[in-house]
Image (cartoon, rainbow, N blue to C red):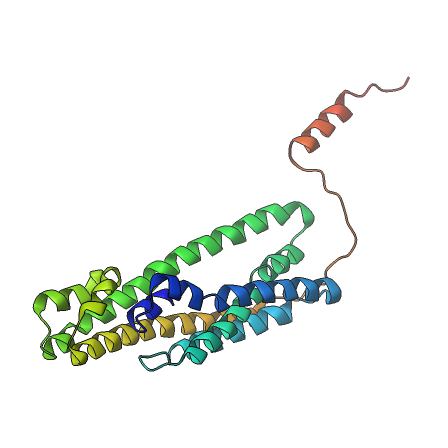
Length: 240
């Protein structure tokens, strides 16, 4: 989103940071609502479905962002996807903890965190590759507008995202519009990818089992404390 705002909408880094505030604010608000809802009802599966559905809708709406998109569209789309993402912050952790025994909770939580980190890193890389390859395909169109070879090289390929500050220096209106449309089209392809991945997640969420959340606290002794207790029990003297 900051790349779209700074390239297509020509916003400064400061302004783009302000314009993406609806996204984290929506995530934070929906995260709070999620915690309160689960605490009151003990239900989590519906929140996972709703979060993934809103992510599909929100990412799908991002596809329509272009050169002429209004500020209302930018903010509204972020609110939808942000609420969906907020529903999915803690809910999958609660779901997986409800599926395993108490002594396996730490292992399950750590595994889910590892998978999330790997997925996030892979998403950034794959999305970047899609964007770069899409920008590389736009070089011929930029040259057709009379743009110089050196400037077209800066605006396409691997260096496109790093050279967005040169867009403001383009004086020719036709070339400027062509560059903005090239960035919008390339980002559109990336958002199509993320929409498809969200749809896959929504489909797979149908296989998540529903478990009853237990309100009773059961203490489980693990790690060094468990070993220490076992040793103490072994050396305890036997009454004659």
